Image (cartoon, rainbow, N blue to C red):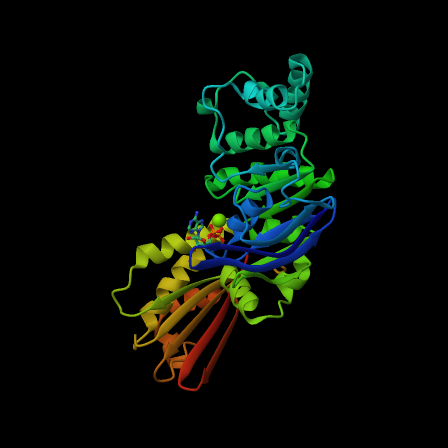
Length: 360
Ligand code: ADP
Ligand code: MG
């Protein structure tokens, strides 16, 4: 359905897209992931010609998009795009947001457009809000209206550019649920996203973008469980864990706790376990004697549902499992009581402590 060959995009000296080639079949759901600034948005914008590519070619159902004889507006209608920032018409009601395009651009009769719009609002769970104005809706509702508005134009392909990143965490799942539903109904979609669980569970393929190319692509299992190339590995590791470098005893405890809580919430770790994690991290740092090079990393093992805390510190051996320490340190005893397993090792002048925290 979509064929991209050697697509490039430069902004002056800046080469954002170097050489992108891919094929996307009808019904595929592609998640595009990667560090920010690697051209993910630019790629989507080139696909629907919001940006003019510098070179290469794009075919939609074998029609060359960049050929000057191609009817671009007509082809572009086949591609709906959902943005981070909703872009609803503020002065129109929800239902009018959905009918204006079909009436003005597709030449539909108002009654027909209206009936179709109501059907779409039902699909996204907002039939009740048909006569509300965008201002009266939550972020998650606005984004669902934006998706329905796209669908009203009967696109063959939907492009999403980080559809949930402007939302409150509590509203992310309602929007993802709608996208998931469209994927089950066979919609062809390309989704730039930071929601890794969503990318893993919903997409048929994942593109990891870096260095101006699709640096690595594969099934979600391949990319998330067994990435092959260096930068993909580093990226996947980073999104799975939260890392801190602690440089002195006066580190910012509250900032660290806040980030840990947000990380746990994202992975749906219970409040109780989150509390343990935060407490254990604080106690672990309390134990340290040498702040020359401490790194603390928090990760979540999806399969087991376990949270793991790894503390690395340079300096002399400091084994918290040693009897003498345990004898008189009640806090430490409490920590260990909350762990499923504790492993300590000392190699190359580094203490490495790995704690798996009990999930109940
Ligand atoms: P991503 O979506 O992966 O975060 P973008 O596609 O938004 O990345 O941006 C890639 C790079 O292109 C960034 O360095 C950005 O500053 C640059 N860029 C994007 N749009 C423009 C523009 N209109 N003019 C100049 N530079 C741009
Ligand atoms: Mg972007």
